[in-house]
Image 1: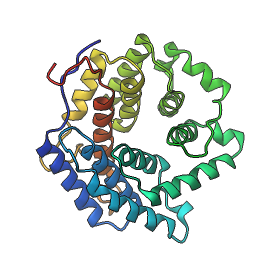
Image 2: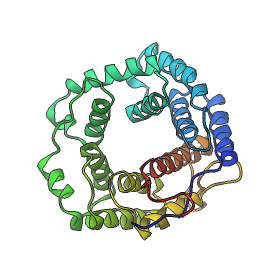
Image 3: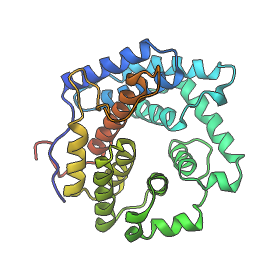
Length: 284
């Protein structure tokens, strides 16, 4: 197996990014921003350089869960259940049981069971159901559509897949938790690296998470990981604005651009560190 250079954040770097994320949350009333910030800080706190830091986030997770539970129309908040699932998983792995988040996930699982087959066969829905099942919640991951099942078995066709199909593919692969062969791993890494040329960091991170979680890292995966690590800014955020793309009037660049990029970066680093081979030392 290729030995990747260590790209884990130092304690000081993790602290700077955590501080940046907290500052964004404090200036916004959005529950989505709060969930994104908390999830990314959980990823940072779960790292080897931040022992014991998860304990400080348990109360915050419960407070967030209570805010969502008592929102007038919680189904219209635009929250991605994946954020809540990952927050719950990270805290539970650290010995913390965020009860309010757990109550929300019970609702999510029950709601998924009421959806029709077409919805249940979608990649993100299967991903959510699979993760909920792993955490012990009542959920059931449906089978993918025949077209997607065929694509999953045909890595040679991934090069010609659309960006939407690739994002869907990554969700299906992780939902099924099947080991990726070396060729499939390299193809995903090559596509992720190519997508970074178009600065599709979110898609690239999704593909790379699948590679590190299910497959075998390659030189291309290491290059892509390095590219994302180089997006780090002095204040702890990740990403650079595109001067050739006009931003929406009144948009907050930190919330619209840098927050999602930072969340994707620290999530990817956490996954890579979690699934790194025990035979592969950090100073390899």
